[in-house]
Amino acid sequence: MSDSTGAARHLMALLGEGASFEGKLVFEGRVRIDGNFRGDIVTEGTLVIGERAVVEASITVGSLIVLGGTVRGDVRALRTVELHAPAKVFGNITAPQLAIDRGVVFEGQSRVAENDGAPPARGASGEAPGETRGETPPAIGTSDE
Image (cartoon, rainbow, N blue to C red; front, top):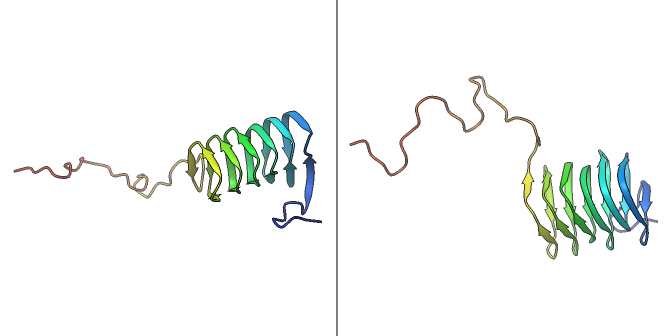
């Protein structure tokens, strides 16, 4: 049986409602948390945070889907982060794609970055996009007369 979001499909593990865990969670595939978790979460797979879950963690994932629980901590995703109402997220999010539904509480900074942590691409002249070498142009609104 799967819910309308498909979150139950191909589930590798579940921390059920009423259960608590503290430590480091490393996994492959898809894991759902409906209980309380505190610590670190690392995966290239998908983490699903259920409606009543409370997660206090540093989270590094392939994808994160928050279906209404509470997350406290910074999130880094390789692919996407989805926040569905009535989720509450307190922390910074870095991901190539970020979707936030109306009704979500998000307190933190978001950074939508395709290649997080990678240096900017450089052209043949060794300049980053938007970067120039040589003399600094005059400020707008000034004149050299």
